[in-house]
Length: 204
Ligand SMILES: *[C@@H]1O[C@H](CO)[C@@H](O)[C@H](O)[C@H]1NC(C)=O
Ligand SMILES: *[C@@H]1O[C@H](CO)[C@@H](O)[C@H](O)[C@H]1NC(C)=O
Ligand SMILES: *[C@@H]1O[C@H](CO)[C@@H](O)[C@H](O)[C@H]1NC(C)=O
Image (cartoon, rainbow, N blue to C red; front, side, top):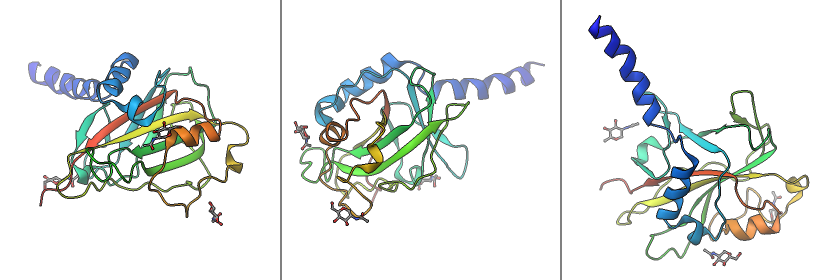
């Protein structure tokens, strides 16, 4: 009896602590990591973003600021919104690295690790799209000797004319991207959801 109770409770507990449950905590983690300043964005999320990486074992959903081993970030990740406040879409999802090649000297930043449009939330909040990514997901690869990089995921409401933007396409360099300039130019405004992870170089 006692044994079966534990078996039921433990997996539930593990699940409950492994995802973000508070917008305030996410916002706090972003500010503690200087992300709004470094990306020159306003960050005041209205719903939670779940970013989930497929793994050989159970998938991993990010808690804002979590550090993952690089081999857990092969991806591509899937995205879900928790809460209806944002509506059903369309949405733009971006992932950027403001720390390339190193957080101390980010001369190549930001690196655009993912940019996709036309995402709609289904009844479960999962974001799906049918159009090719503007920038395909690129696994984090911080160079040897670097500290861990921050990899930031942001979701924006997509303006009607977004797919006609010509600033970035699949052959545009992913280096020296600027999400705030891009968001201003394409009228994405400020993100309404986000999360981030840290990934360090592979041990050599
Ligand atoms: C990642 O590498 C570590 C250390 O080599 C290993 O223990 C772990 O199983 C690997 N994880 C995945 C998802 O491959
Ligand atoms: C991508 O954009 C550049 C200009 O920024 C343009 O020269 C090129 O033709 C575009 N490529 C595609 C595939 O649309
Ligand atoms: C991005 O552009 C903003 C202006 O929109 C600027 O203030 C900021 O310094 C730029 N960031 C980087 C990393 O170049």
